[in-house]
Amino acid sequence: MIIKTDTPLDLNLLSVFLEVYRLGSITLAADALNMTQPGVSGALKRLQQQLGAELFVREGRGISPTHTAVQLASDISPALSNVSNAISNIKQFDSGQPRTFRVLCNEMALLYFHPRIEHDSGMGNVTVEFVTAPGNEDDLLQELSLQKADLALDAIVQLSPSYKSHAVIQDEIVIVARKDHPRIHQTLTEQQYYQEKHITMRIRRAKMYAADYFTKKPLKPRKISTECDSLIAMFALISGSDCIGSTARKLASQYAQLFNLQVIEQPFETRPVEHLMIWHSRMDFSPAHQWLREKIKNYAIIRNHSGNG
Image (cartoon, rainbow, N blue to C red; front, side, top):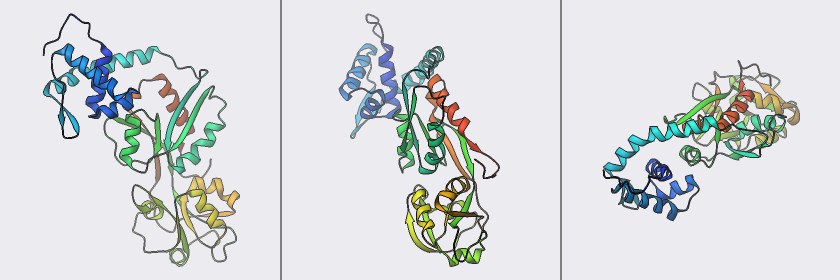
């Protein structure tokens, strides 16, 4: 590789190069860096001129790294990461300064964490904006990778080494029915379970009903009255009917009084309901991100299924 020494090498060009290399796309890199596509293309062109080597070639509708690019990325990525971490460690996060964090979450995580954020007197001038997580797991991770979101609160089965996670919700699934249900009074047998009509919630990524997903043995076909995509809607529908439904114990206890519901043990052996706090590993050493993660950890609901808040 020939490096021209008459012009100082701009480290910002290397950062742009690494982002294009990592994402394999000028368009995605432009979004992640908050730059225009011509700006990214221009930065790559200047870097190639300074290095005297081609870094990317056209391949179909996209681009592919050359051998030189692969070697360069391997050599400089650890060094730039160390520089970034060193700078992040020097900079201090001040919650008294205005700052907005964007957090992706599903409805269960939203109902758990939004009230705690809203009632936290130690937030200073920091705002947390909760946004509904994409239904597709890859889309959610890409939002974190492109820095369009700071954090995700969701249930994901597998994570690549580029992402970190920490368990923040451990709960269990229970049955809810209205308190004045004509046939159900605080207990439910397996036979009764199949005799009653059900209002169900479907887990989008698993493409299964929640009851099927969190029970250890396969369930038989049930009488489905309604399939909804909102836990609050499910509570409201159950409160005005003789249908039953399955949800997490903490949410059931939290909303039982409001919707006049009774919380009943499942007649089947169940698996834990677990949610993770997920972030991209590049944010590990950011003081601001560390502050946000610590906040979420302090709100975490990790318990031995006591049902207490």
